[in-house]
Image (cartoon, rainbow, N blue to C red):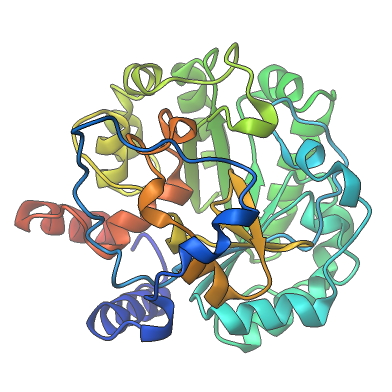
Length: 368
């Protein structure tokens, strides 16, 4: 199977339960109360232009919590905006108890521990242990540099993945992270983690200059180590790193991923087939940013992982005071070229725009 049976069954049960009976306190719309504090102005639709309401606007619930215990990092990757956006709080950390309170408050069945570099968080081992005790699934996103040093702080678990970032083979990846030798350290960490019995997947960002043949070469190279899966997404030029020389437009993305089906069929790619079809322009999906909420040193980040129009003290405030219908392609110009999985994979999980054939396709993908 694509994922452990217990993880698949748990996620399916959680989604079914919440689609049938979503928590009513998360469905309120108090966005007007927060508008005065919003430093950005969402551009209204053009005269006479109407957008269909989001199919899940009244049934909002989270699936993956993006938990950022810190924004400090030991790299300055070209495409990363965290060390730029949060320069004034780069030395601060979210206390362990506060991290766990966010996990409990949100209740999402999957927690992606990201940052910054999570393996620089002193209590990361204790954080993972406590989240697993809450019966959550975890992806710990890391550049892999400290994996060898801190591996002993973790225990293998079928609900836990190390998610190692690799943007290509040695030369390309080291160029992207702006430091030589990082690729070799990451690969060494992957090998050690697999030998110790951990589940490991990789995360790859596709830029304008990315050669998709090299991505296939990377996946083939990693096959010898028994890597459990690969995640992939196009680079999006959000405000903190808006440099169009390296980022992709929507047209660029569709061209770049046009033949990716063959690669996805050959290797354990964790992106869903409907999301891949969306990247190729063969399947339409609305943005469902509330499905992947972000918590960091400043609180609940709204509206999404990449755009900051506000920071909320509570998860309920994020859900009810964010003008969700004002975001997404066609609504906000900042969203026009975004096709990131954190905004659109939740739509697949919710079953939005899925027909009978799509459901069969998803089932076959899960069982492969």
